[in-house]
Every structure is written in structure tokens, then in C-alpha cells.
Amino acid sequence: MPVNKNALLRYYAIDACLNNSMRPYPDLEQIRRHVMRQLEIDISVSMLNKDLAQMRDLYDAPIKYDKIRRGYCYEQQGYSIKKLPLSEEQIAALDYSTALLQQLKGSRIFEQFESAINRLIEGYRVSKLLGKSEKQLIQVEEPVKTGGNEWLEPLLRAIVNRRALEITYARYGASPKVHTLSPYLIKAYRNRWYVVGYSTTRRNVLIFSLDRITDVHKSTQSFYDAPGFQPDDYFQYSFGITHIHGAQPEKIVLAFDKAQSPYILAQPLHHSQQVVESTPNGVVIELMVYDTPELLMTLLGYGNGVEVKAPASLRDKIKEIIQQMQSVYQ
Image (cartoon, rainbow, N blue to C red; front, side, top):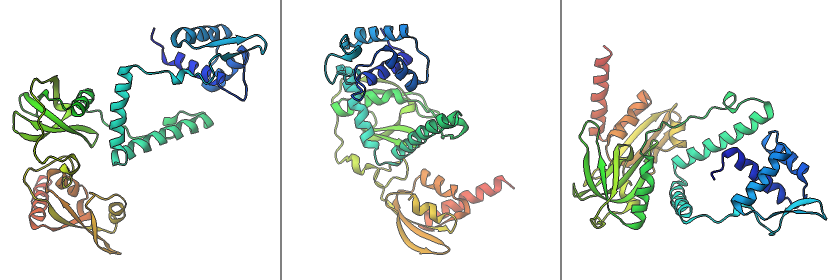
């Protein structure tokens, strides 16, 4: 029988009470008060008895009443419903989830998640103290839901088990196509998930956005290792999610004004960022990246706070876009 969230919270509170070595053998009234304090709810003795019975039934919890000490305890020392063994399916799910989080650790997206979680927790604590809802005190930016998360697990399984997949992919404004894909890598960028792999259909390593995938099936074809592909190096010179096959990265020289400089120094644009010159009027930096649409969009977003010094080709692109923008507003 499935357990609802409220019942599970009560079970955990009861479990903590029975494992409290400072107050062993609590009676029903002591357990009831503990649950009420922990969850800030009202619970009757009859409901508590039902919960104890459910814990015995659902978890085989060895709960007994000690007549001599006139209280409840676990017959098995060290028992807790939180230490129950997981099923093979649950263990597999945790394996993939842990692998995913481990890869995210240390990245900007993980730091954003960690910061958001911490802020939510602090907001919850403050709201309990002041008697206000957390949204009245702290509001956290929520990422836009783009879809495609349902493909994460089958893709991760295929990467780990080296299995080819048949994926149906629909680019914007194009008809869906089926690719035989040997997936190598999952990447997150701006709250969207991408998979990198070799498409036998296109005979090249491609990047697919998960929210544009409409179907995934196992393939009868063998997994293909693309010669020279290295997951650690694939996005080394990418600014964003774009990878340009056969291209050479360029040295990008950017001059940021006094107002933007502190932000650029605190949060580098790219891992290759190097400071060329720093003055009271601003900072000049170098990047070693591909010239991509993401780079253009980012630089344009700084407006007159940045000047492209080199290369000339990128400087000319920025000029042309600015002129086109100017014509729009004339």
C-alpha cells in the first residue's frame, strides 16, 4: 500500500523518537508530543496507534511495548526505518542520480542549485521564526522548464552500458528524423540538457537538445566509438553548447569598462579567461574560444560596457549587428 507524504513524515518522527537515546522507552503521550512538536500538527492517540501498526506492517518494524519500563522501543538495537535496504531498481536509480550530481559538482549549474537550496532552507527557518510564508521573505528564481528530462535516465544507461539507441529528433522548423546514436556525454547549459554522441545516420558526432527528442528506443546496431573523441576536451573551446568540427579556437580580446570589470573578474566568462591588463578604468581579458552565436549574444548583452579588440572578424560582426539594430529603431 502506498504511503502518503503526511503519513511518512509521522513515521519518521516516531522513528526518531524511538531512537532517542537520551529519552529511551517513550510512552504514547511522549511520542505524541514529539510528533506534534516536530511536525506542528495535532495527532490523537488513536492515530498514533494506527501509525505504529502501519510501521509494523509496512516496514516490519520491530516495535514492542516494554511492560517493565512502560514504554515503546525497537527490539532490534540500531534499527531505523530510514536504514531499510533498497530494491535493485531503487539502487540503480540512485547510482545514476549520484553519478549525475557528482559530475555537476563544482560546476556553475551545481553552485546555482546548491545556493537555491540553501536559500530555500534559510527562508523556511526564518518563516518559522517570524510566522510568515517563505515567499513573503525570500523569493528564489526558478528555472524555466524546457522538458526532455524523461530521456536523462535511458541516455545515461546507454552511456554507462555502451548501447546504441534509436532517437527521433525534431529540429526547430524541420521534420522529425531518426538517428542511430551512440551517446557519449550529457551536458547542461542554461537550464537545458543536451546529449553528445555519434550519429550513424549523419556519420559524425552531434549535439542533441533533449527537449527536441520525441522518442528513444534501443538499437540493434553496435555501439560506435568515434576516433579521437574525448569527453573532457570536447567543449574545451566552446562558449556555450556549440562545437565546431575542424575549427581552430581564436584568441578573443575584450575590454570591459569600470562598471562591468568587477563582475567579469568575479565570474569569468570562460575557463580560458586571462587578464591582460587591469586599470582604474577597466580590465582587458583574453579568451581562447570558438567564434559562436552564443559568444555574440553574450557580448551584445553587455552593450557599451565591452569593446571587442580582437580579432577583427568578430569586431566587424559586432559592428554589423549594431548597425542593423540601429536601423530597427530609426
